[in-house]
Amino acid sequence: MTTTARPLDGVRILELARYQAGPRGGMILSDLGAEVIKIEPPGGEETRTHPPMVRGQSVYFSVYNRGKKSVCLNLRNPRGQEIFAALVKKADIVLENFRPGVMAKMGFGYERLRELNPGIILVSVSGFGQFGPYTERPAFDPLGQAMSGLMTLTGQRDGKPIGTASSVVDRYTALHATIGTLAALRHRERTGEGQVVDVCLLDSALTMVEIPTSYYLATGEEGGEGGRPPYRAKDGYVVISAGAREMAARLMRLVDGGAGTGDDAPLVGSSGPDARRARIEAWCAAHTVEEICAALGEAGVPVGPVRTIPEVARDPHLWDRQMLVKMDDPVAGEMYLPGVTIKMSKTPGRIGPVPTPGQHTDEIISSVLGYDLSALSNLRSAGAIA
Image 1 (cartoon, rainbow, N blue to C red):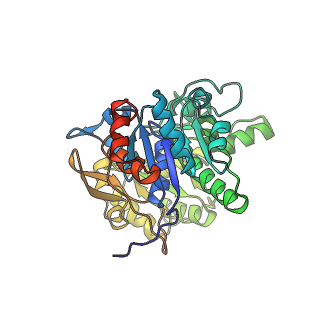
Image 2 (image 1 turned 60 degrees about the vertical axis):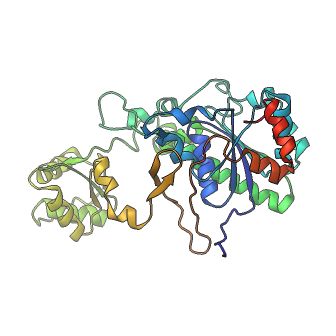
Image 3 (image 1 turned 180 degrees about the horizontal axis):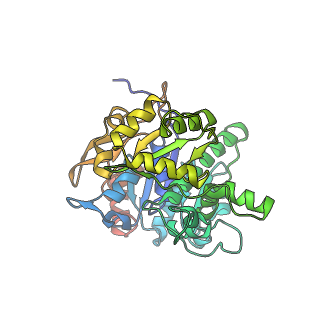
């Protein structure tokens, strides 16, 4: 039986990453066809027990690690280090999200990796990058949101800073790691050279506030982007994004009962005159969500309801695009996971199952490195693999 080729077929990645920003980058590359070998400590990576849990399986781990192969390798064991060094020689990419300097302390900094494999690409994901005053600090997503100023712009135009419920900075950083990896692969294809790809949470978070930051540096004034509060309807909330003049004009004619008021400045979120927003608020308050969406939809004004997660999970559009899929799971029996985000007509991606800890240890070490059953048994007895 033939299988559909995928864009990154033949690319092998060794993933030394935990939590979200690093593993999500590896997940995207796996979706696109790369063989992602997740190097876990004996017993498995710590986020395997990270809540929320479904019948003993971590949803957190499953979402970011489906489709990967799990090898449990003890990198504190000299023979475990030998196995990793041998795998580096057979790999294209090492993806890691330790604090800067940890890889070097483990004996696998970029110079050592390059000695083992001159074409290796090291993708390093961290809180503050591989250089700079903050480089040695630990960080998680909320620090990126806080230190970039994103929290002060989220939610209402006044009031306390608000962090997002989901780790948006981690997700942005994962995308930057993926883009950097693809660019480094293209460079190596042309030159044969590997390199270091350095992405971090604070850099990624800054891209979310680049307009107000650039505006401030040019003018000394705050502005450019503000909060985006929704409008309250009779039975819920809606978001209206009239980001073009003709859209804003159509919106205001509808709100003002057909009167031509000349209000055609683009309107997105809370931008625009307060008087204009007050008129829109009053109009929305007099109508249901369904009425608002129908009227603005007919007028060609971008509008959408503010949904709950259960409403999102039932959205037929997402199911039709296979952004939500049901999969058999070795622990939970079945799980619902996100689908492939990047749709490609000639080389479509696909997602694979969630691996159990060390599920592919023997397969990878035997098929990639040529170890036989006796050698695997000796490695296991020595505590190098699990």
